[in-house]
Length: 288
Figure 1 (spheres, rainbow, N blue to C red):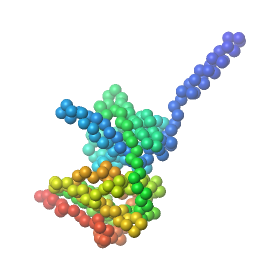
Figure 2 (cartoon, rainbow, N blue to C red):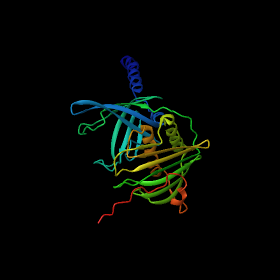
Figure 3 (cartoon, helix red, strand yellow):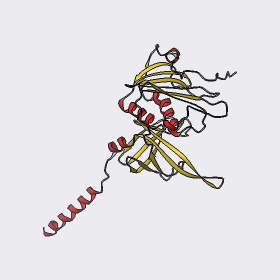
Figure 4 (cartoon, one colour):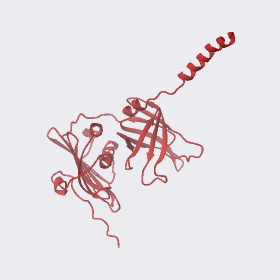
């Protein structure tokens, strides 16, 4: 009996130790904190020379992506971010990519890619440190209008607008998942996310046009209306436009896939004719 009594404190200590080592579930905390636009920088070798490249990480509600990639679902379990790869170019659609969150605060996100023994190593490198893109203006948009054109390929062509309370109109014109006119209502979180990307734009130093000296590229038009003013931006190809502008283009192009679209015959090309953005771009190639 004496031996049993002596073992009780030892067992209690062991149980307490096991209890204290249980991981803390920060899923909800991290999901809220990770929302927004992030910029990472990593080094790689090119012909024996070390070079640096920016790597954008866009978090919009429960979706994430980069520049000119399809958005994918993600979830957070305890301290690990699980990405579902749905990009049309990946070999295994639906592949889960685990990224452990090593640090997440108002300015910094640091992740490390987790692998099992059979996993193939991919770029970007295992550990990336991201910096949250900072707000650079205080614009309160009354309306946002955007269009993208076709190219001599399968670039998606669309026109859309968003008013100040999140009413969304979309016209799929070519190479979009749906074609025709639709309307939808953005959730507050989705709308606030778009507005934050508008406020991340370095408006004071941006040019109205960025045009590449090449052909066969899509063009992008963005009009932001606020306080009786219009901020207009046009990009053809890619020629020095700020990453923040590329991010909002990507978000707007993916937005129709993130909402519940309602067919609307009233949304046509005429809806956007006076918006300053509506056009179909270069003609589609006629294939024999």
